[in-house]
Amino acid sequence: MSQQKKPSSSRGQSLFSVVGSVFASMFGVQSTKKHQEDFRQGNISTYLAVGAVATILFVLTVWGIVKLVVSAVQPS
Figure 1 (cartoon, rainbow, N blue to C red):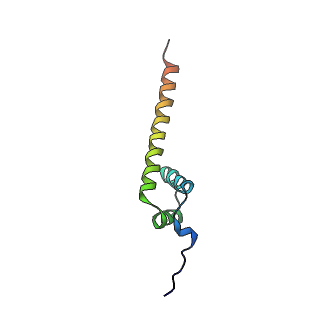
Figure 2 (figure 1 turned 120 degrees about the vertical axis):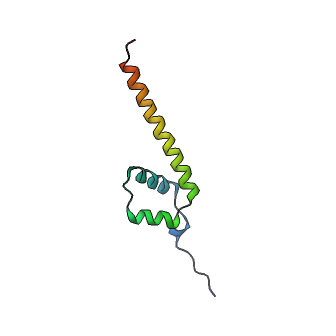
Figure 3 (figure 1 turned 180 degrees about the vertical axis):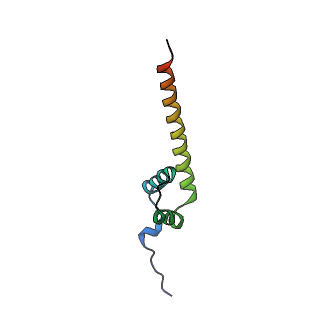
């Protein structure tokens, strides 16, 4: 039996690709083709880590904007 080489695309996804998939899914614009590719090639721990970091960054950004607006509205 001879071993067949796997195509380079089945080795996994790059971090950039995972980040793009996470942000696309956060906004609900992930294509079906990309979604299926993520499930075939992706590693769940990578998606969880990137998703957690993205969520924390989103929350901190909203918190910072609210704090900035509230401080600008309050009288000194």
